[in-house]
Image (cartoon, rainbow, N blue to C red; front, side, top):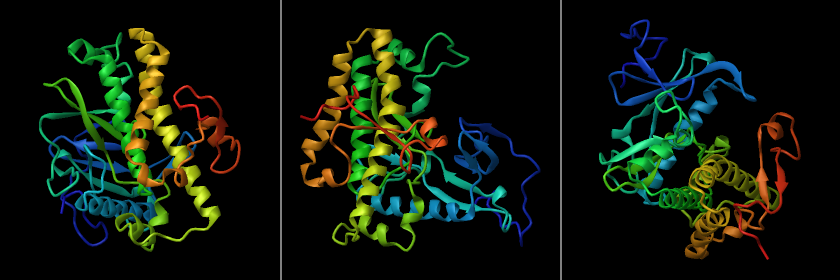
Length: 335
């Protein structure tokens, strides 16, 4: 067991009072200087609309999510070219949620379909949100622009990312799993020699509404498609809303829109061409997977489910608080 995961109540820890670490993008996640793993801690303050404390039930759910996603990999049910970092274990000072933390595996622990463990060494992971943000090293350009200067083709790069992130999320929705795929939780994988996008790395196994997996009913349905879970019409509608909401908010609003704006503003790619790329990413997957019965799992009527911070904090609309938009440029028009 990792030395940072001791049981505080009964054992003496050999950890010093402080840990030398690099702080990651998250205010509560870091990696030790010596070690290929991550530590995610509770942070007892409210950021945006939520308190960032990991209660013990949430920690147990995270471990259960990791178990299920690991089994999906063993059954080769993950999307193609997608890797996941495992959540190995969690701990806390007894009954004190403010001290709860996770230990997550590093790149050598990442898994994909099959039994091979470890991210291929020729792939370079870059956190998704870093691609369109400016930093202290290159204040006048984004990392996307730097990749283009390095030799990546901007349109091909955008198309490959659009195809990869949209198809991966649709695949998960098809098997009734909704990963927390926002741009801080996803890394794009690049082959720097071939100068191309090559896959996705999920930084954890957690899903929306973790507690729905308790009791193993949904887990059984996900892992073994021959044992579907019976749902009422109301329950089915709620799942469709949540699936669509996460698809639009995380994949389109968080991943695709910033890249689309950069592609248009910096490289003068016509908006209609950008729309065609994104529309095709969705339509091509639906055509190739027509047996997935997606019309009962996601809203494909062309309405856009927007959930910005105002919707969430001011509780606009019906729970889980969102609003519907018509004629969104990135969604195909339904006739």
